[in-house]
Image 1 (cartoon, rainbow, N blue to C red):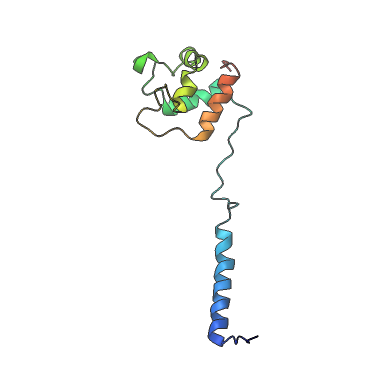
Image 2 (image 1 turned 30 degrees about the vertical axis):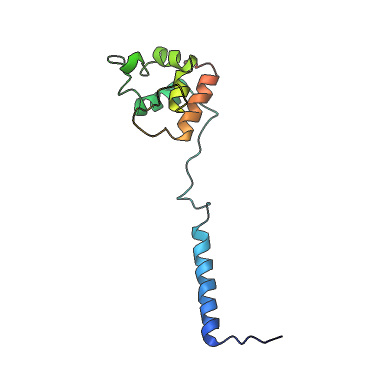
Length: 128
Protein backbone atom coordinates (compact mmCIF):
# COMPACT_ATOMS: atom_id res chain seq x y z
CA UNK A 1 0.00 0.00 0.00
CA UNK A 2 1.19 3.44 -0.95
CA UNK A 3 1.44 6.10 1.76
CA UNK A 4 -0.21 9.43 0.98
CA UNK A 5 1.65 12.41 2.27
CA UNK A 6 -0.46 15.36 3.38
CA UNK A 7 1.39 18.55 2.64
CA UNK A 8 0.74 21.75 4.59
CA UNK A 9 -1.17 23.18 1.61
CA UNK A 10 -3.50 20.17 1.45
CA UNK A 11 -3.93 20.21 5.23
CA UNK A 12 -4.86 23.92 5.32
CA UNK A 13 -7.20 23.53 2.35
CA UNK A 14 -8.98 20.68 4.11
CA UNK A 15 -9.27 22.75 7.31
CA UNK A 16 -10.75 25.68 5.38
CA UNK A 17 -13.29 23.41 3.64
CA UNK A 18 -14.33 21.84 6.94
CA UNK A 19 -14.69 25.28 8.56
CA UNK A 20 -16.81 26.47 5.62
CA UNK A 21 -19.08 23.44 6.00
CA UNK A 22 -19.46 23.99 9.74
CA UNK A 23 -20.46 27.61 9.08
CA UNK A 24 -22.69 26.95 6.05
CA UNK A 25 -24.67 23.91 7.21
CA UNK A 26 -26.62 25.61 10.02
CA UNK A 27 -27.69 28.31 7.56
CA UNK A 28 -29.37 25.60 5.48
CA UNK A 29 -31.37 24.31 8.41
CA UNK A 30 -35.14 24.59 8.13
CA UNK A 31 -35.27 25.35 11.86
CA UNK A 32 -34.20 28.93 11.27
CA UNK A 33 -36.70 31.28 12.98
CA UNK A 34 -36.75 33.58 9.93
CA UNK A 35 -37.78 30.80 7.57
CA UNK A 36 -40.53 29.19 9.62
CA UNK A 37 -43.96 30.17 8.30
CA UNK A 38 -46.60 30.95 10.89
CA UNK A 39 -48.76 27.99 11.80
CA UNK A 40 -51.99 27.58 9.91
CA UNK A 41 -54.81 27.37 12.44
CA UNK A 42 -57.29 24.77 11.26
CA UNK A 43 -58.78 24.18 14.71
CA UNK A 44 -60.45 27.56 15.26
CA UNK A 45 -61.87 28.39 11.83
CA UNK A 46 -64.88 30.71 11.98
CA UNK A 47 -66.74 32.71 9.37
CA UNK A 48 -66.21 36.07 11.09
CA UNK A 49 -62.63 35.53 12.30
CA UNK A 50 -61.13 33.49 9.46
CA UNK A 51 -63.23 33.26 6.31
CA UNK A 52 -64.62 36.82 6.04
CA UNK A 53 -61.10 38.34 6.29
CA UNK A 54 -59.84 35.98 3.53
CA UNK A 55 -62.75 37.04 1.33
CA UNK A 56 -62.10 40.72 2.09
CA UNK A 57 -58.45 40.37 1.12
CA UNK A 58 -58.85 38.26 -2.03
CA UNK A 59 -62.45 38.23 -3.31
CA UNK A 60 -64.75 41.06 -2.28
CA UNK A 61 -63.30 43.67 -4.64
CA UNK A 62 -64.89 41.75 -7.55
CA UNK A 63 -67.70 39.94 -5.71
CA UNK A 64 -69.22 42.74 -3.62
CA UNK A 65 -72.86 43.23 -2.63
CA UNK A 66 -73.31 46.14 -5.04
CA UNK A 67 -71.69 44.83 -8.24
CA UNK A 68 -71.02 41.10 -7.93
CA UNK A 69 -69.06 39.73 -10.87
CA UNK A 70 -70.84 36.73 -12.44
CA UNK A 71 -73.59 37.18 -9.85
CA UNK A 72 -71.38 35.71 -7.14
CA UNK A 73 -71.31 37.53 -3.81
CA UNK A 74 -68.53 36.79 -1.33
CA UNK A 75 -68.90 39.97 0.72
CA UNK A 76 -71.71 38.68 2.93
CA UNK A 77 -72.46 35.44 4.71
CA UNK A 78 -75.56 34.49 2.69
CA UNK A 79 -73.83 34.89 -0.68
CA UNK A 80 -70.70 33.06 0.39
CA UNK A 81 -72.65 30.25 2.05
CA UNK A 82 -74.54 29.60 -1.19
CA UNK A 83 -71.35 29.05 -3.23
CA UNK A 84 -69.70 27.20 -0.36
CA UNK A 85 -72.45 24.61 -0.09
CA UNK A 86 -72.86 24.05 -3.85
CA UNK A 87 -69.12 23.39 -4.29
CA UNK A 88 -68.20 26.49 -6.31
CA UNK A 89 -66.10 28.11 -3.59
CA UNK A 90 -63.66 25.24 -3.11
CA UNK A 91 -63.74 24.26 -6.78
CA UNK A 92 -62.76 27.78 -7.80
CA UNK A 93 -60.09 28.49 -5.18
CA UNK A 94 -58.52 25.06 -5.73
CA UNK A 95 -58.51 25.67 -9.52
CA UNK A 96 -60.35 22.41 -10.14
CA UNK A 97 -61.39 21.44 -13.64
CA UNK A 98 -64.86 22.67 -14.53
CA UNK A 99 -64.69 25.71 -12.20
CA UNK A 100 -63.61 29.26 -12.92
CA UNK A 101 -60.22 29.59 -11.19
CA UNK A 102 -60.23 32.28 -8.53
CA UNK A 103 -58.86 34.79 -7.88
CA UNK A 104 -59.32 35.59 -11.55
CA UNK A 105 -56.08 35.99 -13.55
CA UNK A 106 -54.05 35.39 -10.40
CA UNK A 107 -52.14 32.48 -8.91
CA UNK A 108 -53.92 30.07 -6.63
CA UNK A 109 -54.26 31.23 -3.02
CA UNK A 110 -51.77 29.86 -0.52
CA UNK A 111 -52.52 26.45 0.94
CA UNK A 112 -53.47 27.70 4.42
CA UNK A 113 -56.45 29.88 3.44
CA UNK A 114 -57.67 27.17 1.05
CA UNK A 115 -57.44 24.60 3.84
CA UNK A 116 -59.26 26.95 6.21
CA UNK A 117 -62.04 27.40 3.66
CA UNK A 118 -62.31 23.62 3.32
CA UNK A 119 -62.62 23.21 7.09
CA UNK A 120 -65.37 25.82 7.17
CA UNK A 121 -67.26 24.34 4.19
CA UNK A 122 -66.96 20.78 5.52
CA UNK A 123 -68.41 21.97 8.84
CA UNK A 124 -71.52 23.12 6.94
CA UNK A 125 -70.40 26.76 6.41
CA UNK A 126 -71.67 27.95 9.80
CA UNK A 127 -72.37 31.63 10.57
CA UNK A 128 -69.97 31.86 13.49
